[in-house]
Image (cartoon, rainbow, N blue to C red):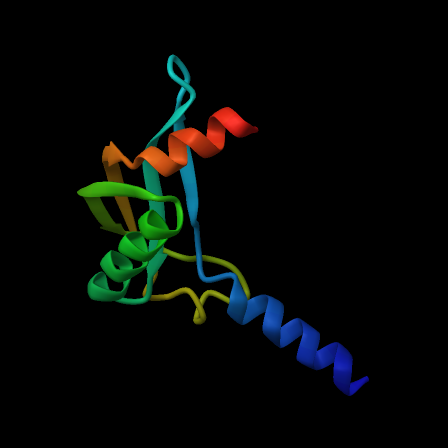
Length: 100
């Protein structure tokens, strides 16, 4: 029973919001990266970290506070969402896509 509660806590606390990419459908490259954080600074740091993990450089284009609703809204009450446009993809990311 204790493991069940620990698992539930990890799932609820681990899902802090969106972290995904938006592709450019013409070139199959990553066009935008979307990240989130509990503060504006954390959101920007997460965006930079996600861009580094994807081997791209991004420019912040949008940041907004996303209101939360539901029974666990207090966990997500400070959810900021940042969107960054890919400025330049590194050579290794394009080479990895060609390999796939």
